[in-house]
Length: 190
Image (tube, rainbow, N blue to C red; front, top):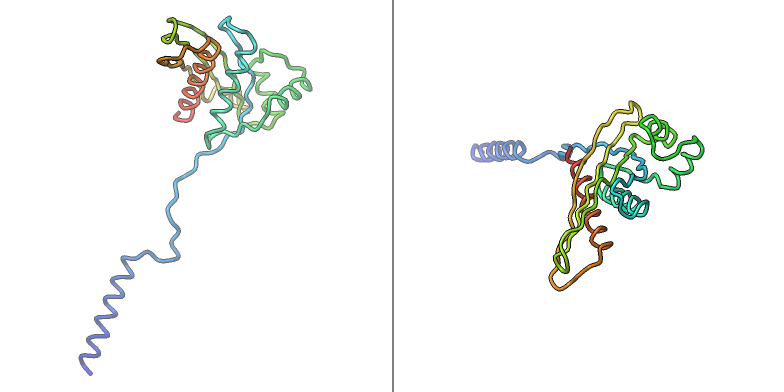
């Protein structure tokens, strides 16, 4: 009888010890805090490089939008046609001032507006060692205050390839994509 009582007491103590070590089913697993997602309207970039005009500025704008859409930080679902429609409605014309960006952001219900410029395009080398270098500037403007809340200046370069001589347009497009990636990475890291 006494051994049965001791055995029961031992089982109770072991269960009590195990229950302190094992998580209870009522405990929620820990989760990382999520960064807020900003609804961002992206205005067409301005091409200040003197190379290829509006075509290159659209390519730079689209490259940045694509890179921003790959993150979980920015909602870039405001399309170019939505922006154009609201600009026409508000009587706004490019290039946009900070006040224009605030008004446009408010009309689009955006948290922020992104503006940018393609500062320079450079080509160097010849044949398979020919490379392009592109510098992009991005500035994110808070819709409510009109203040710059994020941004980046990055230079992207195309890669040289052995046995392949790409045309200049391909090299420039590759450099723009690299610069767009670096700009968005900088803004996300900030």
